[in-house]
Length: 151
Image (cartoon, rainbow, N blue to C red):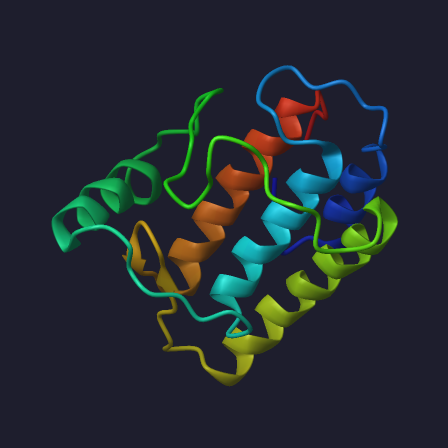
């Protein structure tokens, strides 16, 4: 997965419908798309975040997922989410997909303007552009796998 490859992401998300069965988790397809969109917005300056864990915990999580070649395992749960998926933010799945694609463009544009910025990931701390790309690629791959979408 390469989130910088707009066409690849667009093709992949078009495979996701409201009736696509999931392999694990509670998120619906729309929840997944919204979740990925907000993660992109954390990194593109649209939804600045604060660290919600200790600095040491953030360092370890960043080391595990970004610096090492570890993937998100089925069932991995971020401390940002509750036991149940949140209410939908966008009116439907198609609108959510459009917002996701816009957030990818926003990510690219943000780092063209602010190449040295390190937006905060709430559980990993400050990430530079390359670290965000690694994280987003793993995150997208994890959720696409959740719905059987091969990338």
